Amino acid sequence: MTFSQFFAILKARKNGVLSVFLGTIALALIVSLILPKQYTAAAAVVVDVKSPDPILGMMLGGSMMPGYMATQVDIITSDRVARKVVRDLKLTENTQLREDWLDDTQGQGDLESWIAELLQKKLEVKPSRESNVVNIGYKAPDPKFAAALANSYVKAYIDTSVELRVDPAKQYNTFFEARTKELRAALEAAQGKLSDYQRERGILISDERLDIENQRLNELTSQLVQLQAISAESSSRTAQAKSSADQLQDVINNPVVAGLRADLSRQEAKQQELNAKLGEAHPQVQELKANIAELRHRVESETRRVGSSVGINNNINSARVAGVRAALEVQRSKVAIMKTQRDDAAGLIKDVEAAQRAYDAVAQRLTQSSLESQTSQTNISVLTPATVPAIASSPKILINTLVAIFLGSLLAIGFALLRELMDRRVRGVEGLGETLGLSVLGVIPKPLGGKAGLATAAMLLPNNVMNRLPAPNR
Image 1 (cartoon, one colour):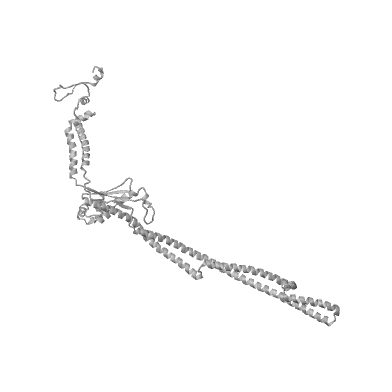
Image 2 (tube, rainbow, N blue to C red):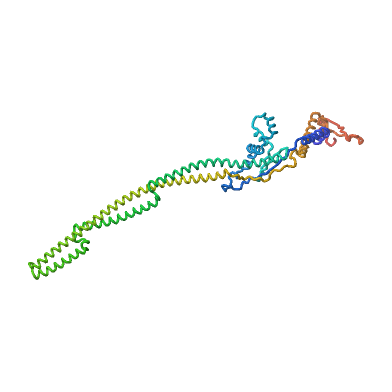
């Protein structure tokens, strides 16, 4: 089909085409005028994904996720928010809605759920493409009701967001509160066990007391070493006193022995002198010999006394060594016991410290969860509240008319083509040739005075004959 044939069909079917075209437009206008007016009230909220958490002081991890804004849209359109709107506006007390519910469900089901589902059908939520603004719109026949519903949805969305954050915090707060009581009891038990152990052992400051006892142990060790050296020396002098007491240093340095020996030396010298003058039988010589014998006896006696005193000192030193050694052993046992006690106390102290750390950590989380469970702050703010719309959002007569023109044009063309298929007519010279299967030899115009302009009087020949004719002589 050529364009000329197409326009010829439209021209021939112009009455039907115009009827369908104008009828479609008229129907669209009538429907647009009959339909009740709908008003759309819109509010806008902004979701701040960059603000830090008011309690933790850090960025919210979930708000940086790509699907965060989609999640917010799902929350707004959820049944929970819709039910909250129903409760806030007390729509279950509306008589008309209750009657509609009874007519629709025969009293079966939940009225609140039915109204919430009804509200969701007129709700429009559109997040911005490149921003954190979410537009919440509601369509209703009453402009005031539409504005009230839009603002109520915004309020319910903000309250629900706070609840979604507070409810888990309340659960955590209950858990941490119970756990804190358990850890506090464990800490008190550990502290009581440590106190009882210190009281039973008499430990006040175990490290300081152990340092004192270690110092005492070191002192006893030093004393033992010194006394052992003195005892060794006294033992040596005692042995010397038994073998050659006169060569003993204590005997040599003894002033009494030294004086007696000096007297003995003088008496012996005097004896030799008198012996040479008077002879051995002289009474003076005999008296002098008796004195010399007495002095020798006194020297030996004093030497024995000094030697015996060295032995006594040796016994005393040995006894002191034994005493210090016994005290040292006792001190060592005491220090060993104190080290064991210190280790046991250190274990108990570690138990107390571990219980304290666990308690502090849980107490900190309890404080944090308690603050979170009481917070009413959210990262959602109302950007633009909904106002009562002055112009109806639907029906849109101009848009409906333009759509009707487009659809009417398509329907009119389709009608013309359908009618042409049902009732075929010859539309011009080309249609005549196609219908008869013959080629057009020529066209004779009508006379100038003709009423219909040009007439198509065609001279027709079969196609096989036309193909044999020379081209210039056609």
